[in-house]
Length: 400
Image 1 (cartoon, rainbow, N blue to C red):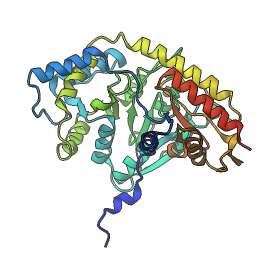
Image 2 (cartoon, rainbow, N blue to C red):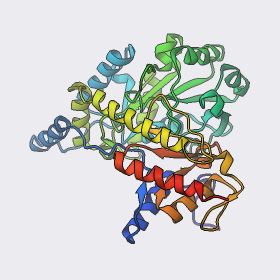
Image 3 (cartoon, rainbow, N blue to C red):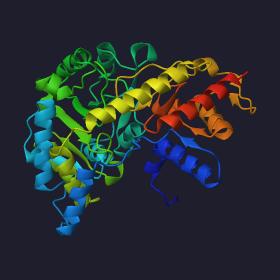
Image 4 (cartoon, rainbow, N blue to C red):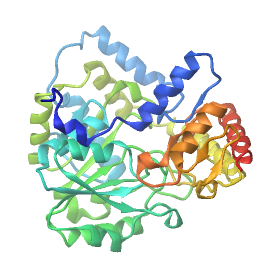
């Protein structure tokens, strides 16, 4: 008899964390490593947010709070949804967790039964399928091809829905592709969902404020109010506010679902960090002026990386609408051999050889459900990005 739960046989460790850990280990050994795997901004949390956290400590706000968030934070979240998304929620419809990942996990644990299906467009964030599996459900994938900007179509969604479908999990702008759905593209999907009242919508809007150029962010319940009563809208402060380590995510949806998620959280972590909650109040209620200059920086970095990767032999890199990732294709590199003697038969082999031979850490595409690709996070300094792209170009030129 094995000691460990059989549930663990259904899931795997996070590949993005594995890449980041491996890069850190090599760097500690003295290797010249450029890590492009971590999905977090390289700039600091804004000063006003840090000051709010410091003030909370000085004021002794260091005790347990309500399981899923202090009233002040729930009010700030309600105000944010109304201000940014034209969605009206009451505090009782809001749940705050230790990062967006916990909020998603709580929702799956509270709703999934064996046999329930969750439709997930691919490429997808690496944790989505495993959270579904941990909850006892079955992930069902729809492939968004590069030729369509990594986006799925209404016909694909319609074909994937079965009587067992419980959730449609949606993410725009996307991790790992940066692809963003326009209002009309999203409306086509919500029109399908309106025809299937047993299907609920879970939308991960974590990259909402990282939207570039002519692209304008929108979210399903905003585009189609008819889905409001069966949509869980998930967001957080990690990306736009450079607060990844503060671990605050949140969601709003039907009150009965929020109650069920609260029950899960009450028997797992209980309340998120009190100090982080007060910092998040300031993030949502305070100045938003830094968002535009930060976005301008990301646009510059995106264009630097896209242009540089498209100059590499065997790489094709679309220009995404948001987030801080690119997801280039290496189809023309498959079957070749690296200068170090590695056969590039998969995108994982490409990423492994790239790290071993050049010191550039990226995440292979199979981790996100679409190969042969790799993901680059351009949330790092311009100089590091330019250096990394130069190394990638040299690596590709050495393939034979």
